[in-house]
Every structure is written in C-alpha cells, then in structure tokens.
Image 1 (cartoon, rainbow over the protein chains, first blue to last red):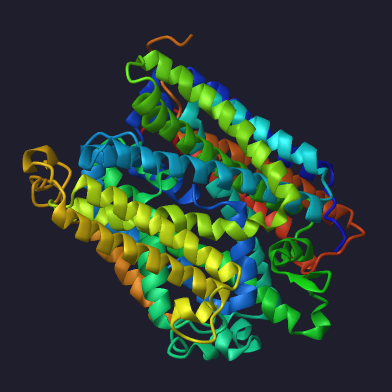
Image 2 (cartoon, chains in turn green, orange):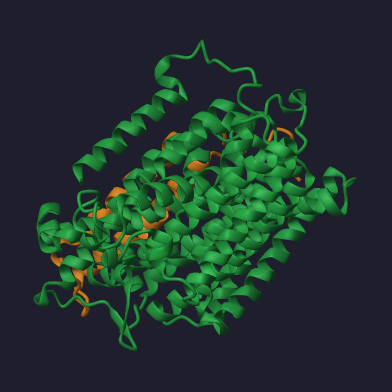
Length: 553
Length: 75
C-alpha cells in the first residue's frame, strides 16, 4: 500500500501530543515527593481516574490493530475478548479480590504473595513478571516501529528512539502518576481518533444490519455456531471459549497482572479501588464499537469488488493488521489523519509507559528491596525507581532490536501471557479463598503450571503434538490452542498446589487475617445508598453483558 | 520546588486542553479543505467529517476545561 502522508496540520497534532505528555511529566514532577507518589501515584485517585487508567493500560495500539485484523480473520467471535473474556473477571476483581489486595496495603501483586505465602513465591513471580514486562515492552516497541514504518514510511530507528526517550522522560520524572495521566489522555484520543472510522463505515455501507448481511453468516454470530468448531471462523467450541478465554486467560490477566491492577492500587480508598475495575468494565464493553465494527466494515468492503478495498498482501500473505490503517486512509482527510495517527501513537506510548511503571515497581520492591538491599531507605527506593525506569527502557530498546533480527518473536507474545498469568490465577484463587494452601504448595504449583505452559507451547510450535490434542476438538485454530494451553497450565497449577498443600506445613491462621476470605472480617458499607455500592454497579454491568451476548447471539 | 500550598490540577483539565487544541487543529484543516478541496479525495469527503467531528471535540474539550478549571486532582 502507499504510505500515509501527513500534512502540516497533521504534524502539528502529533507534536501537540508529544508536547502535552512531556509537559505533564514535568508538571507532575513537583508533586512526586516520595516513593508512594512515584510508585502508587500518591494513592489519591478517584475511581473514574483509576478506572479509565485501568482500562487504558490494556488498550494499546497493538491491541487495536490486532483485534480489528482478527475480526476480519475470525469475525464476531473476537468480541468474546471484550465481553465474556473480560467483564466477569473485572467484576470478580472489584467485588471479591480487591478488598484483600487494597486492605493489605501491598505495593504490588508479588507483595501479596509474600504476605500470603513466602519470600520465594514472591521472588519467583517478581522475576517472571519483570522478564515478561520487559519482553512485552520491547516487542511492543518493535511492533510500533514496524507499523509506523510500514504505514507511514517513518524511519524505524527514529520512531523507536523518539517514543522510547519520551516515555523514559515522563515516567522518570513522575512515575505512575504521569503514566496514569497519559493513559487517560490516550483513552480520549483513541475514542475521538478511531470511533469515527466505524461511524463513517456505517454511513457508507448503510446500517449495522447491512454490514452483517454482507459478511459470511458464520462470521456474524457470537455463540450460535459454537457447538461445532467447523461452523465458526475461530474454529473453537463454546467450552474452549468459556474455560480458556472466559475463565483462565481472562481471570489470569485482569485479576493478577500487575500492569492493570496497579492502577486500582492508586485509588484513594477501598470503595474507589473496588469501583475501579467495575467502572472500567462498562467502557471495556463499549470497545467493540471501535474495533469489532471496524473489522466487520473492512470485511464487508473487501467482499464488494466495487469498493476498491483490499487488505495489504506481503509475499502472498494477508496482513490483517492493515485493516484499520486502510480504513483511516479511506475515510480520513488531513487533520483527521493526524488525529488517527496520534491515537495510535498514544496507544503505543501509553502501553510502553504502563509496562515500564509496573516494571520499576516490581523491580524496586519485589527484587531489589526483597533480595538485594533489604534496608534501603524510602529516598533510595525513589531513586532506584527512577533508575529502573531508565534501565527498563534501555533493555526494552535492546529487546526491540533483538526482535527486529528475530521477527518470529511475535509468535511468543501470547505464550508469554499464559506462561505467567494463567498459573498465577490458580495460585491467587486458592490463596485468597482456602486458608490451608501452603507456601510450598503455591511455589511448586506455580512452577508446575508455568512449566506446563512452556512445554505445551513448544510441543505445538515444533509439531511434537497436534493442536487438536490440546483443544480436544478438530479443526482447531492457533487461537483455540492458546485458549486451551492456558487452561491446562491453570489446571496443573491448581491440582499441584492442592496436592502439595495437603502434605506440607501450613501457615498459622492468625498470620492470614486480612489475606484470606473467612479469616478476614467483612467490611459492610452500611451507610452508603445501595446504588453507590460496587455490588450494584457490578450487577448492572453483568446485566448489560448478558443483553449484548443475547443481542449478537 | 513546590510550595506546600501547591495543588495539582485535575486530569480532566488536561484532557479538556488536549481535546480543545487538537479539535481546533482538525477544524482548521476541515475549513481549509472545505474552501480549497484537496487533490486526494476520501470516501464521504462530501460530508466534511473533519468539521463536524472537530466541533464535537471542541465542545467536549471546552466543557472539560470549563468545569474543571479550578478543581484539584482527586475529583
């Protein structure tokens, strides 16, 4: 495809974004006085601020491009990532898990593992999370440079270094607070920058119903073809969707990934922290109106020879990620092009900042202070957080160059998530709800789950076993194998943790007060009107989720 | 260094500022295209999306800016 050329006003919009985020970092530096300000944004955010940041930390440009492309490839089934594959987990976090996280005053997820289990489980999770975060950060950086080079013709090195240095500058100055501020700005830029694509697509084609009429019937449903994998675009059964995506991957990511949960820790009180993921769930449910609609519009247009719309082909292989950029070029004149490109840039950079701010916290508290310097002062930890930000960015850049010389690294992205998050969810679930789960049970269960995920990934990749052996159905797509691999990793961790806990030493109950349900006094918001309670908002969110699923059944 | 009295401006103020500036730039581009149509014709160019969409951005940005001009961050 010809590259998208920017006019003067487009460049001014891009420059405005860079100016605003750098200016914000500088402005917020004066309010970053101690380690709590730097790592937890002073714990003074409202649930709206924390909620939008919670959602935006997950809303990277790779996700926008990838999910739009996936919708073109798999159809409406991709909406499962936003609905059943996200909302129940977010609500579970807000209603059941957040009281244990927030009330124990931990600064990170590994910090909870230390309190609930022991130091070795904390360090194991801290190291695996830090490695995952830097790998994902570097691969994102590489992917950003690749997208900017492919669609805008920008120089690979300049776009990578410019964005990395900008992120390093504002996160070093004011830590999580600047990351949260830029994530919220990114949220608005993405809605204003990309929702118009769906609106203009609907205007061109006629109506949402007409879009559905123009795509294959198997691509236009959400559940009704999930009984037989050969009948739907994703080649998966409803069991795989519910167990793999809806339960393990979704709960593993939304309830234990410190990148997103850190935003809830920044809330000003427990009720705001509980409301954080619940509020975010409403906006999460709305995202398909950007990505899924755009993907379906691209699919409908590509099936009409008169539309002139065709995805980019590279060496005979379809580049599905080109769907969204091609729609932007199709509909956006000067000015809007600048806005659309800035929205994508903001998505990339906010994602980078989110990873780095989570990394600097886990490195500082769960590795450096926990293992290397137990007596570090608060001032020293603040300095270490800033140093970790710069070192983290440098390692990310190195990873990005490594990814450039080894492009198949992208294949490992999904594997990385199910390697860390899926088994950790089993550990957290058992640890929070069953008091007799032991430190050794948690540690070895986690090792077993992580090992299972890695072994299954390589077994499928190098064809030692076929996809359908993991998915228990045939045919099976790579996406289906991802879902099922996460399920097996979770199950192995779950079973191992229980079995080992039955024969190893338990922690005394008195040490688990505030960390385990049943041993912790329930907090009742008796004085608050029912409609202000997190549970009410959670039920409302669940009702909307059911309605959406029935509507697109 | 900050003084003890310094209070952090609300994030919504900065959101409003960003929307207002970017919306104004998009609007300017839309007006230029309206007065002097560009060579590159986009699909639905006749609906002038840059103009009506930027008006929405400017109004939203203005509302955020106005309602949060004196508010501190945690609200």
